Image 1 (tube, rainbow, N blue to C red):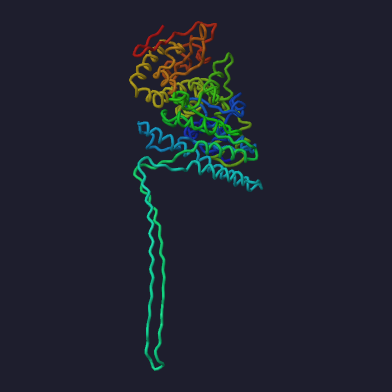
Image 2: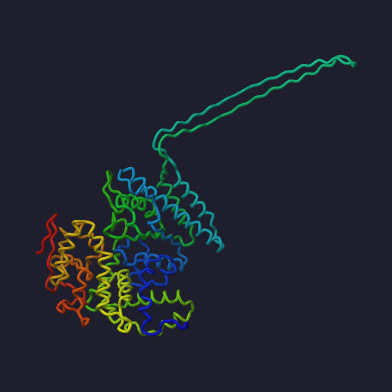
Length: 520
């Protein structure tokens, strides 16, 4: 063991400042070494049905999909992971006209097919190394490439065909007088030349044309040619695409991927930044949630359910932090002894006495927890460990820099955020929203997406009319600490997430009606 390895109380504090940036790395080894199972999620994600995995930023969607991919590959199940942040034409994304949206969607679809084709090529080579017959697979791949590379021109096309023929006949006679007498010579020639010139002149814009029928058939032939008869397609960062083009790409999946027997499609998306469906002239464009594709997986629900239960569990989060710290030290100090050391290490809660509080200040969101812990570790006194004061201060800094800054960009969002701040400073965090009226107000959804408010329970009150929200603790973190390191608001059981149940007094109702925002 290296002499400088921090085996004293600074073991965790020394590593925590490095975790926030490390968690943003997306290489497969980092994702694998830091993945933590969320109870009940893996079996549902592994089932062979088309699914959308919803979750706000930082909830772990990318980790979940990458872990699923590694599990599938370990079971010899072909799996293709595609990050939509790396697809499409940036220029097309910013065109507002209908043609611009269609072109941008087309580029994304072509890139997706290209990613699938490239991955299938790697799969075919792997099968060839194992001695498998791949002729049918390669033929299907060729058909897929052909169906996705047809070109058309928006404009006029002129085709000219010129045919030329030339016939040349030659004759030559010569007479020579010499001592031998008169000599004669003759030369005859006949030459025929023919030529054809084909020219094509196009005026307009060339673009690819997708043959959906050809693509669907070629995909089916590819999947049928695989030894397992299965192909998993894992699409990450769906919400990175502009909203306007999402239904078009979803419609491509409905027509080409979903009907393919043996193909399983998984999508990861931010619910409030996703649009899978749009009405069309003859029906609809996109996919119908619940009918065409399942939409029952929500990472936010999985995370908050564990914190809002009568017996909140922090085991997942403790394991998460320990995995990241272990991976950090393994990377810094190479050697198998690192993992062995952490099997017997017991100083976590000594270094981090306020760990449970940190989970609630992060609202149970893994990325926010790592960020708050990183900041708190830089502020704390190592001899005292990370206290509630450190967590509250770090949460406040993180809230101002990462969350509130975005909310201030919109006047409406800024107005609602200010109203909620006043509400929180009065000693309350919970409020309810009528599911039938204010629930779809864009400013509320923006605050939810920015993690300034959190949805903690659905269907509360008479006839399940209300959803319960809680204000992020970072907004009023300065109220939660005093000199002795205890909570000032002792009447608020915030450590139980200030949970609302049907047998308790209901929280105030926030009503948003256009420019009017009122409490009831």
